[in-house]
Length: 262
Image (tube, rainbow, N blue to C red):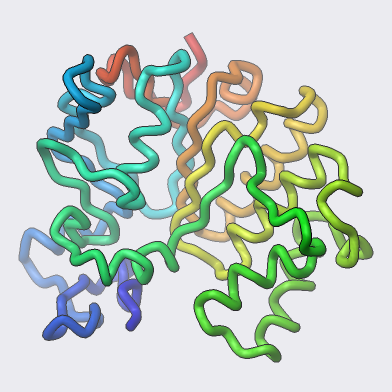
C-alpha cells in the first residue's frame, strides 16, 4: 500500500477500494485545490479533558517544500499541532488534510502507511541505546520492509549527508548531543519523506551545535521536503527568517512570512 503515490505533484489521492491511494488527475475538484498544499488545517480544535483547549480553531495551509516555524511558549499548542499532523492525535472539531487527504477519515490500519511519508525529529532524540548509528537509521527502513541491499545503499548515503560517515558502528552513548540529533535526523530522512516534523530539535543543544542542526534541516528542505518545526529558540527563528506561525494558549495569533520571534 502506498498512500503517497501521486501526491501534490499534479495528481491527487483517491482511496482505491480500501487498498490505498493511487495517483489520479485532480481536475477541478476540491482535491485539486488541496493538492497545492502539503498540509491544511481547517478550524481545528483539540481538547484534553475539560481543560483549556490545547489548540483552538486553527486554520492554515503549508505548501509543498515550505519551511515553517511553530513558535510560542511551552504549553501553547505547538507539539499538539505536530501530533495532529501525523494523526497521533485527532481533533474534536475541524479537519486535517495531508497531501490532499483528510487524515481524520483514515482507518487506523492506514495510519502506518501515512507515516511512511513523514519523518519525525524529537528534542530527546529517541535513539535505541543498544543499536549502533547504522542500526538506528536502518531500523526506519527495516520496519517498512525495505530489502537489505536498499538499506545498505541508503543508510551510508544519509549518514554522509548528516556528517556522520565513519561513525556507523558507534552507540548513542558514545556520541555528543549534536551527533545524536544528527542520527535522529538521518533516521527521519532516510526514507526521503515528503514531510519532516521537528519538535524542538535544538532544545537540548548549545547555540553552535544548534546552528549546525538547522543548517542540516535547511539542506533537507532544499531537496523538496516540507519542514514544520516547533521551537521557542528565538536565535534560530530570527536567523533563518522563514514563515512563522505563533501560538498563544492554543490560538494562532500571528502567521507571518519571513517572520521573527516576538
